[in-house]
Amino acid sequence: MLAERTSIKNLIFIRLNPGDDLLFSLEKAAKDHGIKNAVILCGIGSARSHHFHVVGTRENPPRNDFVKGEKASDIAGISGYIVEGRVHAHIVHSDTEKAFGGHLHEGVETLTFAIITLAEVDYDFTGFDSIGNIEDLRKQ
Image 1 (tube, one colour):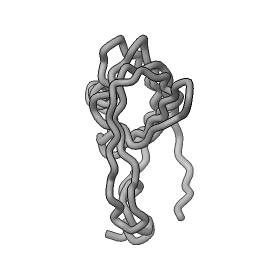
Image 2 (cartoon, rainbow, N blue to C red):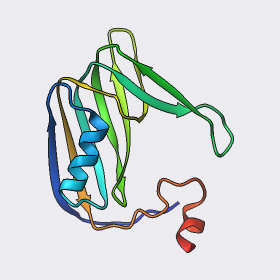
Image 3 (spheres, rainbow, N blue to C red):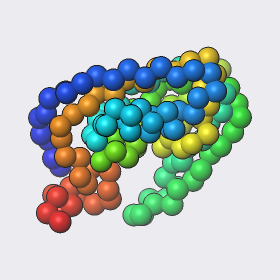
């Protein structure tokens, strides 16, 4: 485990229009604002499609099981990190029957709108989204 303290540099608010792709919009905002490392604090809205993967096995590295569909849903939450400019986001969709989601992929189109808040930080996230013990990954 690793627990360290850092400060927030900037907050970035991203508002997506109908038809915008969530992942591409996050990637574009990070690039346009020169964001190297950030925390995706929250995200809400609605979507006209979904595309994500979840882990499918208990061994490392796990198999990824992909889920894709055209059903409309509320975006109940988006969270994650931007690590060295790469977006690593997870999304939770909901409809009248259930909540569902996982690791965000391209193809999630905004229905009405979506709002995502980023907290840019001066922190080295090296190894945070890699398999293995963080102490071992930081020594490399």
